[in-house]
Length: 202
Ligand SMILES: [Mn+2]
Image 1: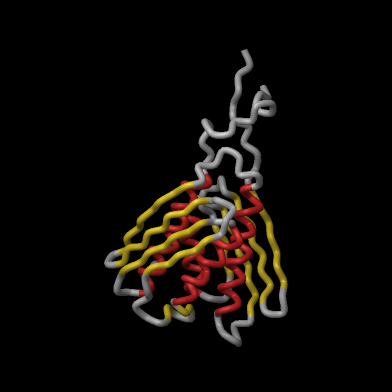
Image 2: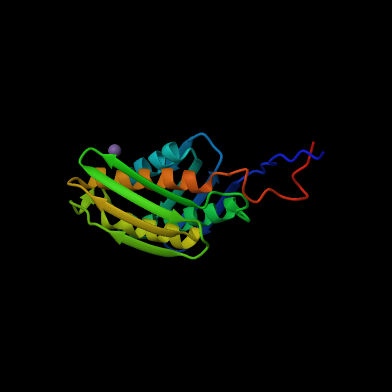
């Protein structure tokens, strides 16, 4: 009797993007251990992306050289674009993934929820606001823009909701909710979509 087992191929991506405004390089391993090297020039964004890798158990490198002399907008937006493209590339044909996830993460007084579907049909909804305008050099509302950009480029239907009193905690809770939801949704469930001809390799 043929014994089918899951032949896990590498689910990794390396994406670079260069414009007049930013140069971005991202590598991503969906089946990593949470190792990250992040240098964006924006301290709080580095902190968020390190946290994202840690809690999503993604291996992640992000190098961004953006026009921070203008402001933080292009850099944050373009990291979202390239990270989203990296998820799409690493997921490939999406075979066997859980697809749906729902996570709610607190951080002291703040709580964020993310419900998502790796649907291939980008949709974004956000309910909430940020209690302070800035966290360090990071403009708080750009966290919302980052998630929208990530969802659009990764092909996610993503609904986010947020409450709290401190923008650092609010944004960090959002990133942790996004990380854990994406970890769940990208996980392979061996009962789903087992390849009918390629699975029997041993
Ligand atoms: Mn923090």
